[in-house]
Length: 245
Image (cartoon, rainbow, N blue to C red; front, top):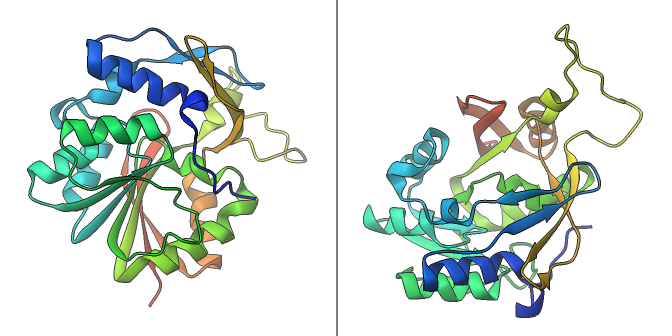
């Protein structure tokens, strides 16, 4: 089941890191834990990158975004600011209260603390942006029908979703180039994460990395057409999802 919650400030490690960096131009380690991987960290500075510093997939998505745009999981607002600079109409949402406050202070004109899946959130958009692996908020494959139903509610006729994700199969590659994946187990792109910043520890959450073939299959089953727009350098890609006419 997809979470419809908002984060409280005391459970918002990423927001706290974003707020620190915005105020002091530096931040401590934003630590990331998972039951599947070793401890990692997110370079907070990268969350404030300019359009020129963004990877090609993100820049391409910003160029393709038209009409009234929804920036999902907007974080520090870097994508929304780039869209505003191009005179585009964008609404930035995030479940993080501290991130939303930073976005407003940075000049994002329409930023709200909103959960995409809240049934009370019911506006209409021409483009829905889900960048920086933001397919992750779907959580698990079993949540994809609910995700596509929400997209049908939010998208205007001829609207589209621009989403980037990564195929994690490279983590299971053998020396001979073959892949060893447990087909009887959970989908290999279903991951759990937990973040910590200083003494602020967030709750564990599910995150979905989805390969393009699987995304295309679920899209077709739910009335959408998936189109590969561009492939990145390391199993990542940008997809366009449009309602089937």
